[in-house]
Length: 507
Ligand code: UN1
Image 1 (cartoon, helix red, strand yellow):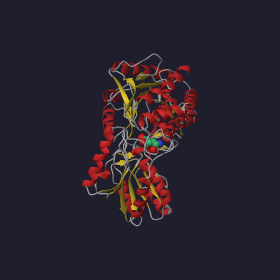
Image 2 (cartoon, rainbow, N blue to C red; image 1 turned 135 degrees about the vertical axis):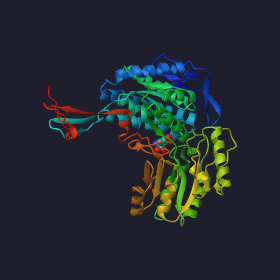
Image 3 (tube, rainbow, N blue to C red; image 1 turned 90 degrees about the vertical axis):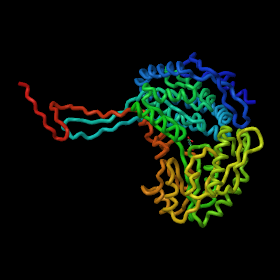
Image 4 (spheres, protein in one colour; image 1 turned 45 degrees about the vertical axis):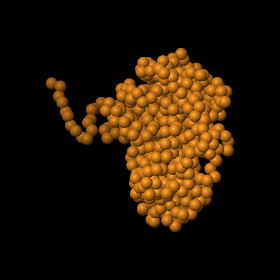
């Protein structure tokens, strides 16, 4: 029923899971299919990259790097500008493809494409701002500078839930930095990746830089090959904490760099001074938007004990009215989960919660229709229940009570992950306490804003088991370059630093 979208994006009945230069196609066996999670129907098939395909692609990325690194950065930015223009023109159909493959609602599917466009706009400006420092030298007639050089071919491993936005955070920045890119998307969302890679490949071709942006579709075996590959000095990986531990270990063993964006277990604190209307609306989006499948999804709600019952009651009323259904239908707010496995994971998390003494206030069921649809669950819980420390990639919100702000912050920080966090308060001191060194320990801390939906202008990422990586805006670009400290002597004496003397005589 969505044949025109596939056609418009150049997708056929069988598609190559390799892209980068024209004519290079995947030879892996067998072909696989992603599933439309709203209908359980198979989408067009993909032939995955074989190991031989992978090696060819990486060799090409290495060769392309030799040229690309000497292309002036603003000229690299010009290629990125053209990519952004094309994505703008194709936003509607690409957004719909995101919807079909991930189950995200239309506005979120298009939002994802907008995130790529925003990255292009940001990176065009950045291509003229890869600034280094001039540093005062302690030695006479010496000058010190810090400069940033391209790093090499970068490996990007992305997850199903942001199948193209997270690629753009990495690839678009890496491209203006002079790196080439080898992208392995989630095997659950290969078509969105193939469509974007096709668009980018043809722009690269028109601009004489084929081989800068490459794609290899494959599973865990291919990922293992990639992370162990010394030709890729940086691996940027998004996924679960378990996956990130593996990537971190293997990359560290070869002393490569990894940039990890892993699980979150994000909390929202609602204080007595909060505007409840604001807090309820923001919490609802953070907890059930994208059917709870963002790494930034709010999974824990920590409410002052004077408001606790009222907040549960108001949220329960919202949950009961959530329009759940076909994600391409404009009235829908909640689409399906990605897979049957996700539905089962949600069910077993709720079972565990109940066994630990939690009470499911509303939701947690499965819709009686094709597709992986669930009703978002609101659960009364306590911070000491082991289940609240677990990131379940589904819409489950555990609501807990607190008595004073120190306790709320301790609960919020009391999990291994450290991605995003939020407080709802109109009390300046509470807000500042939350943002202070003894406040939230997360990479992202918001006041009167939910935990999800970050803008690209800031650095995105988290602490602790979230992996420590930072992507997208601010100075995240530095992860994609190598820093070089240069000292230049323009005098006729060789003075040594720290006052060290080493006077030699020549006969
Ligand atoms: C993710 O779920 O991996 O802040 C990324 C957000 C989005 C990105 C989420 N901009 O919710």
